[in-house]
Length: 523
Image 1: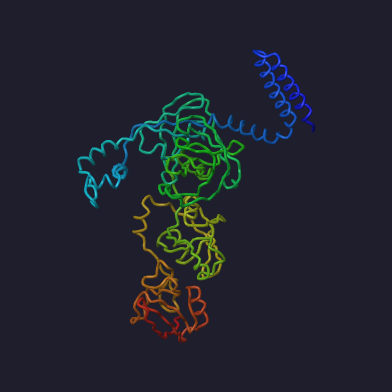
Image 2: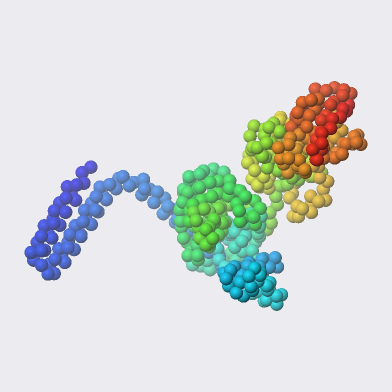
């Protein structure tokens, strides 16, 4: 490809024009300079045309963005909210935050001048607090985004956009405005459904978020800072994000992370793929303290959003699957103790009688690896998997017990509205029974250490029905002169002893004393 001749001709003509202009002077100079500039632009245009073939890939991506935007925009709405009243707890928090910030605005010198050196400023009196409570009682009007997921008028958005509000107004892409009715909310996932009665609505389909990969191109559509129908693009930066600081209000976290520009007002709007399908609902951003996107935003995956939106649409509320167990994260020392191959999974820490897990035979110190082949890296992800299956479904739980893989089928129950109250009413199994010794025990872990050192290992004896001289919470460290680091190891040692034979056990007390005792192995 030869481009130089064309550009050279124009440049030579430009130089000749300058020389001629210098001779003619006056207005002619301006006209010639203009001609030279036009010549340079024409040269650039011709070069651009010549390399257009090389830009075909870029132009195709640009065209894809254009087409996706056209497809998505009619389904994205702007939501304005008003009215309502904040909860008492939120009002008190806002008052405290306001007073704290006000006190922090004063320099140390100003505080010393007002109150003397080392003297804390006096607390505001109750009259001032009550005045601030009145000011904070009603939230100011707000706004957010939403997406039409059902052409009969159902709109999916964030719970935090609509919570504690009474008035909802939806603006469509063609500037039609409609009052909306709140159908249902789910604070645990930060999702909510509104409905409008309007003709000619276009619903946007959901994609399968399990197929989303890091690096996928995505577009965010919404109303950042009230600028409706704004489209931004980026990539999927990560998947499966959990335990995000500052988002404790969302109990079930399994976010898609993106660097698409998402800002206040985008909340509730869709993140879409290059097929024009919803891969997530934008819900939060990480900032530098200025409430402006810093290139890290979080999206609720479409598979979860689709299930929640369907239940809210049909029932106005969400029912979740329930096992009835307490969990602990797997720490590095657990891998050897429980006979694992990796740290993936969750440790059953408690089992509640009368609940699905207990009825199916799960026990303390089982390590759950997956549920219906869905692997869980941590507790947050595991809880979300179980909840998303919904009540009444029978699931296959793959676990490791005493170092051996097992599979147990469990029919999920319905998660109670008040989990704490439900578990308080249930009988809690927190130990593993060792019938060969007539004891209940647990593998020693750091959180159970009592007065023991973190580097201790062994089996913590909690109850011993036939050993009146044995005080509780002794650490069993050896069996028949061989060290014991876990329930698994203890069971392996006991399997080598016949009923009626004597077993030599070594213990360590919480104050560091050692003791040895011999007992008969029970049948």
